Image (cartoon, rainbow, N blue to C red):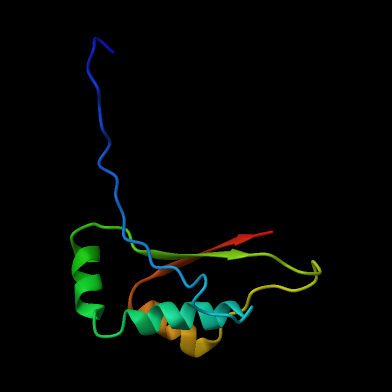
Amino acid sequence: MLGRNRVAPVGGWFLSSKNQVTSKDVRRHIAWILDKMAGREGQLLELQNEGYETDISCYWLSASGHWRPELDPDLMQRLASLRLLIGFDVY
């Protein structure tokens, strides 16, 4: 590379429910995160309008392999109103 270094513009803001929510119900974790963002909706939408990516990523481990994460309509509405993508890392 001819002695030149290139640094990619990467950064982020992370909020984790780990050690904050004891429930194994993913809905409780997502609701906790959304509750923490209450009152900051305008700031989040402003960041999105500036081109920043915003999402919620969930790690989900099935104890028996026979269940799945579920979102109820109220929670989905809260996510949609903030234009938040949600992804599941399922194992």
